[in-house]
Image (tube, rainbow, N blue to C red):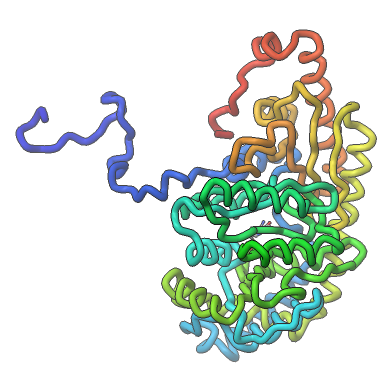
Length: 441
Ligand code: PMP
């Protein structure tokens, strides 16, 4: 120390981190890194960039005038309840309505087994918290939802990916993944799965596979965590039987109002086997005491006074038009050798590009060409996905989607041309940095 007993603060000049708290952080924070998707938001939201990157719901069809009147009325008449603490499990009336909604996908549940959460993201966090010790294994589709991967990393769980095809999770691949985990002397705590209109893959688990997936998990003692925020967004109004509708004892189901009503209210839920429910409530209590009464009451009132089924139909229409625009533009513009999924609900298309293109390395060049996407690597825990990208069609207008895909196709064609002409090494020298620019990192 240079000045008596005064400790010196770390400085950049000393070659150390600028964060003076570095030595204090818990080991689990090492796995907490900004997702590639979040890092993208800053650049992708510039107006000149067509963003096919984010997954923001399209709220234009919401009846804002009548909603604001309802919310005003709610505060005027029930403000002393709406602005007060409430039950950790959530308001009973809302939990009853949630059971009615889940019945649309064949679920028969009791409101006692529903825990209201601050978005289904909180449900994911709580489920991981109560089931996973550091080093435990979670099985998840490859690719998988980036927010779930973030929760698993935060609790130091290791993800083993399970392959999908156009019909969703492949049962044989699930058996093999469980066998590999068991052979390594580990135990898979749960299978995390998004059966309907998958984020990011855009595929749906075939109904004919559902019972088999559950049977495999039951056979090997693996819990199923079913995440279903898009289930009511089938473009033809079609729904699929929830995994929970086949098995009430071995499935924890996560639901959300973010895609069917308003993401900003942050209201979701977990439906759990009765015994698990108790621990979830305790976990929720320690995180938030109780979910906000106000937003729960807004959702509950909306469900009882608005034509929410009609509103969901409008959302389906909005997203169907955009899906059609994206698939049409992909067919029209993309170079040979690309392939992509054809979703019949939800927000996303998963695109695979030809050999020679690295989607993460290409991203800065795409942004320069004024189009953004989410590179596939963000959706894997094990660095796969460099020849994939997620394209979201939920938010931009159909015209902007078409223009975005046209720009993307040009960038891809340039990359492929360079690869064909110079090969992988020379291409690097010609086309600039391979790592994302600082604002994408
Ligand atoms: N699961 C999946 C598959 C998602 O796509 C999302 C949001 N994009 C969530 C969970 C979290 O949603 P929320 O917290 O808004 O309910």
